[in-house]
Image (cartoon, rainbow, N blue to C red; front, side, top):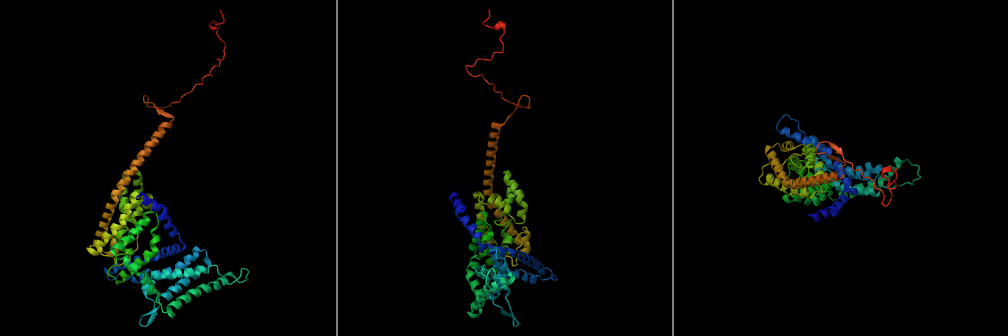
Length: 459
């Protein structure tokens, strides 16, 4: 275990941090995080649409869902080149880069006749289903704009105003992007949108198996146990999950398990790695440190925010890293058993990404089923059973460490204390040792005048 931790700390983690800070990855992560308000709103409208099935007069919110969550690929195609130019400090080109990415994406998804001879775009391409295509076209546009970021047709001494120079300087890279998309789609006849989906479909297919489901959750827990944000995996995992979510919401799939709403419904109880049971167990720990951490992390964990607990106790702690990894293996397999094999609880067919909603409220809102609440309770209890033995070991370690430190401090205090307590009077008295000076050897004592009766020279 020591050798594994040494490899993780000195080899694996620095490489992951390097990837996480890569310019292209950062631009991609920024873009995905910036669309979260639309994802949250889409989740809210999807949740409100559940009431339409109960109350006949309740308004239908599916239209609002389509105008929020149904547009996220469009936003990503714009944001990736925009954020890339921002990171490159080419702020004058960021808007034109975003618009060029938007144009290339729209060319890629190929307008088609959708209703009564009217041309339009398929909603699946603009929403979660087109995420892969939006990422690829955004990266292509960003790459072209990066090459021409410092390009100009004019000399520095030119008298032409800067805004006019920016217009002409942006024309060449934008023309390259647009002509590339037009030539590929209209001239050559390549369906880039379907081609990108075909390339990434193996990833989407693998994660819809129980082993792929467990692997995806394990990778999230494994990365998080080293203090690395789970968002480092988002470029690969989120598009596949959003595509599965779109299939479930549209009713085109037989309830695909691996997608974001399943995590918000059953798995992330307290945050990534299901840490709410850990926090509750900390409240009963003998260690003062763990109890304090449990109290501090309780309120955030109820709303599925677990950074205080992860960075305060779990990250790079071998005793608690192992159970976090086990959560990523055992819980998804358990959920697969309880939803696909038995099936005790339903898989949500509504998009619900309000990850900060406390459990089991989120479970009921996303499914409308009390059996789903029972499944969430089972997951909670199993998660607690995984955490418990490892936390007890760590608790004993901290107690022994605190006792040793207290004993060491007491010993150091006794050795240097200037005060001592009197056991007879019960009062504290100051004991000071006065060291008298002894006269030097072979030095006669000073003569202060001898008495006549003691003078040996007198008779």
